[in-house]
Structure formats: C-alpha cells, structure tokens
Length: 178
Image (tube, rainbow, N blue to C red; front, side, top):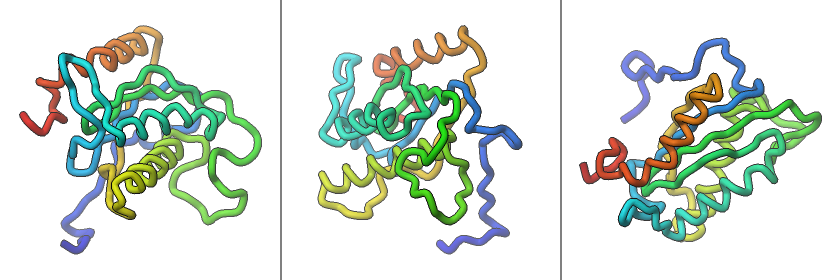
C-alpha cells in the first residue's frame, strides 16, 4: 500500500517541545518486526537467548563504549522485544557515537534518546542479518516506546517491572501466542 498523507496519519508519541537530549532516565521498549520471536524463548520464567538475542545483549552492552553520553541501567531481552533504562548524562563535547562530523541534518538531535535508539537498532539489525544471511531484512518495528522516568521511586518501579518481565511472559501483550 502506498503512503497517502490524507489517510495515513503517523503521530509521534514523543512529548512536544521536550528535549530528549537533556540529562535524565528513560524507559525504552523496542519491538521486533511483526513481533517475531527472534531473540529467544522463555522457559520457567527465564530468558533463553538465541544467537540473535545474544547479538542484542552484546550491542546493548557495547552502547556505552560507542555512545559515551549514556549509561545503561536495568534491561531485559524478551523473545520479541527489549525493555531497558537508558540514562543520558551531561553532554560531551565533540562527535557522538558513530556519527560523522559532517552530515545532513537529522530529525533527531545528537546525544538524544532517538539518536541512541536509531544507532542501537541499526547495529543490531546489521548483526542479526549477518547471522541469518538476510541483508536488508527488517529486524525492528518502526519507532519505539519511551517513558521519561521522573524520580527515584519511579526508577525503582521500572527496574522491578523489567526484572519481573520474563516471569509475566504468559500475560505479556507482546506475546504472539496470546
């Protein structure tokens, strides 16, 4: 189906006028293309990662080496999505992550949540497509869910939600078997 702007209205879930590059903690959920269970399975409430899931874990952990402006907190790789907390620190002078110094303008500011997610999704997709021998095949759904974590109490609730997520897989709306 061809995109028709009079029929297809893609609305951003981001807060208007909010600077997603400012220091803070953000809860992210990124979902696999068509909710495919590429990343592993849940057995007895524990995640058993597939090779694709291991690639997700490795790229998530490698993110702080590439993107020095972030810190990682709790995360979990589920069969078809990931949840994680990313903390954006004080801005660092110079180029960020993999971005070249001279580039065309982007819709997402450097050192922002959107920039992090785009780089992460790209790196994971490349690795997974190399593993599967499927260059260019989509790995992720368009966009991602984010929530701005506003205080320590909320941060602790989100950490618990992430830790408990594998045990709740049978009730998870992302579970394609439901």
